[in-house]
Every structure is written in C-alpha cells, then in structure tokens.
Length: 593
Image (tube, rainbow, N blue to C red):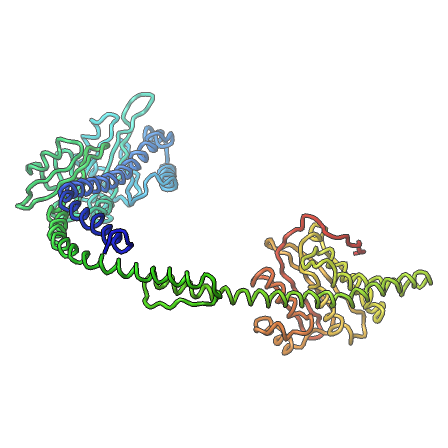
C-alpha cells in the first residue's frame, strides 16, 4: 500500500495527524487543563455568588428607597411634627395613602411590614398593632441606637417577629426622621422584610450558603438552628471578615471545602458559600483515570479502523470512476451497481436515482408542454363564444338605439356589462363599487319581469366603496333573494344592501322581505358550509360557492352567515377584510342610491 494512493493517504493522515497528536495532547495538556477547569469552576462560583449578592443588594436598596420616600413626604413630616393637630381619621388617611404609594410604586417587591412612629405615642403600621405596642417598641434594644444614629440608616436583625402576625424572623432597616427646618427629631420609620425572602435568594446557590454580619453573626441560614449563631471564632470566618471578597480552600469540620464569599456594601454583610472540594473535583480525577485507559484502547482501535476506512473509501471510488468512464459515451440510463450503506454507496445510489429522475423529468416536461399547449388552445377556443356573444349584444344594442327602442337598448347594455365583467380582464378582486354596479345592472334586467314589484335599496358609506371584494359574490345572493324569497310574493319585494366597518372588517348585509327559508332547509344550507365537497362536482355558482371562495381567499374567519325566519325575510351577512384598494383599476358607472 503506497502513500500515493487514496487508501495510503487516508491511513497516513489518520495515524500521523489524529492518533499521534491526540496522545501527545492528552499527556502534555492534562495538568494545565485541570488547572483551567479549577479556575473556570472558581470563576463560575464567583459569578453565581455575585449575582445573588446583586439580588440581595437590590432588595436592600428597595428598602432604603422606601424609607427615603417616607422621610421626605411633607404630609408625613407634618403629621409626625404636630400629631395633636390631626384627627385619628386624618392620621389614618395620611399613613394609608403613603403605604398605598409605596405599594403602587413597587419600591419594595417582597413581603414587608411598614412602621413609623412619632414621639407623642403615635404608631402607624401596615400591620395590626395591639394596644401597648408603642411602648413595647420603645423598650427594644435597637430604639436607643436609632436615636443616636443621626441621619444614617440602622440595620436590625430581629429573631422575634414584632408584628405578632407570624413567627418568622425579620430583617429591618430604620431611620430617624428630622424636621428639616429645626433639625429636631420628629419620628422613626422602619421597614422590615421576612428573613425567608433572603433565604430564597441564597437558595439559588449550591452547597451550604448563609449570610453573616460584619461581626460574624449568622443572619440567614437554611438551618434554623444557625440563626444568630456566632461564627466569628471559626478561622475561615476571620479571613472572610477581613477581606471584601474572595475564594479559598480550607479544612472545616475535618472536611476539605471551597469557601467563596462576597460583601454586600450597603450593610457590610457577607454571603458565604461552602462547597465540598471532593464534590467538585472528584469527577475530574475519575475522568483522568478513565482517559488513560481509553487512550490505550483508542490507539489500537484506530489502527484497525484507519485501515478498514481507507479500504472501504477507496474501493467504491475506484468503481465509481470506472463506471462513469464507461457511461460517458452511452445512454444516460446506464446504472452503476454498488453494495453498501455508507456515504460512498449512498452517493452512487443517489447518482443512479438522479439519472432516473432526469429521464422522468424530461418526459414530464415534454408531457406538460403538450398539456399546456392543449389548455391554451382550449382557453382561446372557450373565449370565442362569450366574446362573440358580447360583440353581438353590443351590435343589437346600437341597433335598438338607432330605432329609438331605449328600453331594449338599456336591457342589452346591462346584459353586456354583466357579461363583460364575467369574461373580462382576468380580475378576481374588484372594488365594492364595481360589484354594486354589476348588481345594479342585474336588477335592471330582473325588473323586466317584476317591474315595480321589485325594489333595491343601497346603504353603503362612500369610504367603503373602494374596499376590495371578490368578483360576483353578491349576484348569487341577490338572485336567491329574488327567486326563492320574492318571486311568490303578491306584495312588493324589497332588497336592502348595506355595508359597515366592524373591527377592521367589511361586513355586507343583504336583507329581503321575502318568504324566508324553511328551518330544515336553512339548517341544511348552514351544514353545507362546513361539509367538504369536491369542487369539480359544483356545477353552479351558489351561496356555498361564494362562501368557499371567500374562505379560500382570506381564511376560515371570513365567509357567509345566514339568518332567516319563515315569512319574515332573510338576512345574509358577508364578512371580508376591510382592505381599501389604492387605485381603482376600471371605470364603473355611478348608480343612484
């Protein structure tokens, strides 16, 4: 096997450019790869920690914004400064409006409790405060701290829920409210959130995650027993407290742990995450051992596979080359015989199919060409008679005018307009104005029989006359109104055609005062709208035909609806898109409406 053949080149390429580089890469890059993975894992942990830190920081920021909004509200300042000048109702209204404002402005997006108090015994809360609650709050350990905090914020962790509405621990922020003119203390505002909301944010991280203050006291932890636990004596916590953020590997409770932490700047609290080292890197060690075994097996398998692949590729290619040379000067239907299911065999099978399809395509094109020529001849032939009739009608019309028989001339003119519309311009979409013109001419012809017993009324706004409609959708409906509704009446028959715009749709209403439709027949007509029917078996243009044409053109939400009662007339509603035609393509005679 020489290296100049395809088989030799494939074998050499696989061996020198795949197997050998793969082995070298594995042995020389394993350690750096491990270091890189460790670095990436550390970066990933820090990124996740940073995201959680931002979420908590955002929650605390919402609390600060809410307190700031309260401390700047003039109504609140006035009420806290002079509480005796306000009635209990006014105090309730002012505090309630402030609570609603904070709620509606989404300053706080978590479950919260709002409290503000003056120095005259007034307590205003978003929770139910029992009598004596004001004095109870004054006796808390944080009350003196907030009085001495000047204009800064005081963050408070309260294991006991002061609201008594539930037992969950709270994390609160309080601020002393001062009178801007006298700089006197006039009240205290405090906003609290439940510790479980912070815990939910921390739960987004893997491992053991908790929140500590700057002294190492646990503020939030998945285990309730850790609440308010002092971890400042732990060596790793001492390192965490001293720096803003970082990551280290330390022994904690005789267990090697990855310690990641980050500071929340608004409070100097720290998020601490503990992940067992073996949990993260155990898979790397197992993968390394498995890789060594796999590389040895792959090396042997690749030697065998490379020989097999090179032989299987080169042999069919040689056969393909030979067969293509044989059919170069022969008929295109000559096939290539090949066995197998790989890419090369598939390529040869595709080539064989391509030859068959080319031959079939040529035969089909020849047949289609002959069919098109035959259809074109039939189409030209089918137009001879209608055009001959149209031209004959025009000639008779002018003869009637010459002989001053205006009634016959007008009838022939109307018939000519209708016939011309049915065969002319290959235009399926026309304006409503054109369609009404066809109906106008059609009714003139019908009045030959009915004279004054038939009347038609048009109620169409000018702006809707340029809306697009399908040609000849009104004539079958008007024809049904005349022959099935008005024909057997002894009184005068009236057909009313109206158009309205409704929800960006054009709605055309054709109403008559005829005999109506029998309920059984009406249900049969409605059922036909939803029953599939072979289009080739429809020999006449009826309501079903109009309904199908509308839905084929515009979709299922458009079409025809029929309402009728026996001896009470019929209403046909046609729903179309209210698309206005930009340019009228043909001149339509104005009609009197």
